[in-house]
Length: 469
Ligand code: CA
Image (cartoon, rainbow, N blue to C red; front, side, top):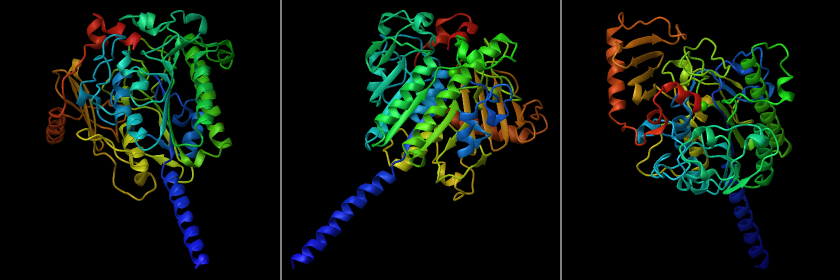
């Protein structure tokens, strides 16, 4: 009898252990590496020749390169809001870059929206953000009040890179001055700290240490480099890697990208060293296209053959370098169907069974069945963009794209045949224009108007906005 009780005990002990094991196995870690204002063609995996990115390329080689990867907006703030909530930011009025207003609780991500960190917290994840926040500088919107347990970075839309340039200790002492906000000390959680290194290297160090600290629990690391966003600043060590680039802007930009690439390499090495690489999804993407349009201050980036760049409703504005790896689960390959930064939240929510807030349905889908070949259909029939202030819209329906630019006649492109959006076929295809216009109006009817003024309303000249965001 005793023996039987012991057997039952063993069985129960096994079941408890197994349950714990399988729960953890169902909860992979997630790392999102986001760059700022990086061009579509500025990674090796998209054909870049003059800036080697061997480490960023490792993600695409280990996993999947997305040739048609989109973000939800063509400038920083709203694009990040879409990434963090898994919802089109136009649904909740986040359609402008927020001003740096540390005493305005409404300037930033609305409190009713749920961040990925808030969702993952409910199923036992520890979340950390390293780098640029840009979701509101008021304390109520501080990352630690939006689901993150750790923060090492800056609250505003950009930052200076050299420690000697960071002269303002208190981030809350600056008000409504973007240039000054670039000079604040870096914050560790709520404490201002003095950095010692080039900022990109500081962020990379922190990322490696974050993984070390949290290796034994499910974690979400949001590594949001502010590079290669302006100001164009790089150390001699990185500049010296590009003796053959003569254009000064491109050379500095290349050095900044190279610093990011080093950091990505160290982070991937850390995952491998700790044997976490098979239980960690790693995403790499840029928050919007490279600023290359003549009316936007350029940073030396290159979107390849894509039309225009940052801030635009053409492909160069919001089709970005995009790759992900999940070693052992997703086989290496190239994925051509349109996908979105919105899919990151939906994917990790499905894998971790983290809750989605009631009344705030996600706009993305779990991409894993599509990437493993289980689901042969396409993840998205439509990809949308609206820029309220410019009355600009893009609707991609399969391979057709409708562009509505203010009150001009609508344009239509076939992206499969005409990736450069050179050949407007609207006149020849009135039925398609009508069909996509109906889709546009339906989506538009679900959206609200912008809920805060943001940079665009605070500056008379648009060019200034684009310099700063
Ligand atoms: Ca950006």
